[in-house]
Image 1: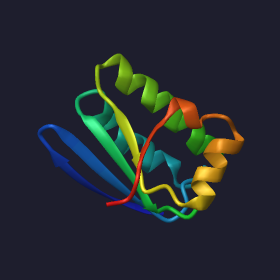
Image 2: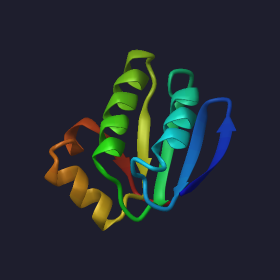
Image 3: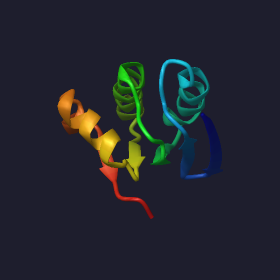
Length: 101
């Protein structure tokens, strides 16, 4: 898993490439938390094949942290496996999704 980051004054976009799981979570989590309390943050999951429970916990916690700071964490481009995981685990209503651009 790797990620690319583009930061603009009003928002940050972090692109995840590969699965987001316990082995790859630390770098992505650190990058998300570096931005989420200061900017609206887009986590582009277009190239993320799947995610696990540790990633789900991070996404919910980061969403709460963003909201407390008056910002948003937006999940962009979730593929079918990712959307299914969000739905099956019941966390989908707590997260903000947008289609891929």
